[in-house]
Length: 76
Image (cartoon, rainbow, N blue to C red):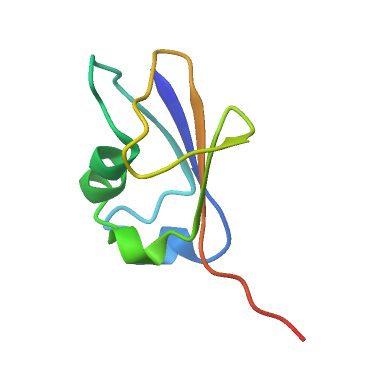
């Protein structure tokens, strides 16, 4: 299983509204596929972290990975 976490307002953009969920892992599963399965657009996600390290949309996931998504953040 992949532990997936959506930070800040990303859960409001997903089709399920979840902030945290698990997804079944399979060989070749990419970050992009997880994003699209949750109803998000790749442009909604600014930063991808896999087990605390920066990932990309094409990063392949493995069973037991912790995947975190962050939107663009602004501030002043």
